[in-house]
Image (cartoon, rainbow, N blue to C red; front, side, top):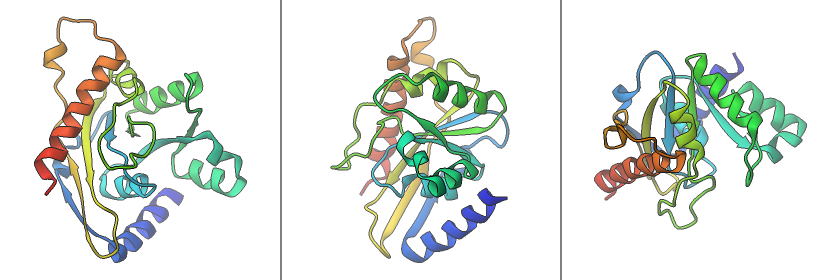
Length: 193
């Protein structure tokens, strides 16, 4: 219930502040586990992906945010769960896999942190880990800004990634992540002006 109220509240605020255009919503499967992997250019990215994704979505958020009681409670009610940055966090990995096993949508920003110059950085292996360890469809997402009041902001959802080039191999999680990042970059190249 909190998630739905927050989603519609943020939707109204964002519609007032930004001219959001969404492309490719039809590429998101209606059922089954999904991983949405997006570039990361602003602190606004999680709420913007949250309101433009037709499915409820769970995000990992840095552990420090959960240390503040109100924010931590709010994040948990918004389906977020903590991750320790800079190290392998087994609890976060288990939580993410559990979301996918239950058929939910997991939102990831494979870069791990915001890009200060807006250019796509190398992704961390976590996205590849979740893709390899689940039956989830992986959907690349490109947020094309900048976030400026009353200016256009585009969110593009690409088609599910086909890992055909990796068939027959036993790729590392990093190789799978690199493939995901190439798909995000392709969306940025196609839709950026």
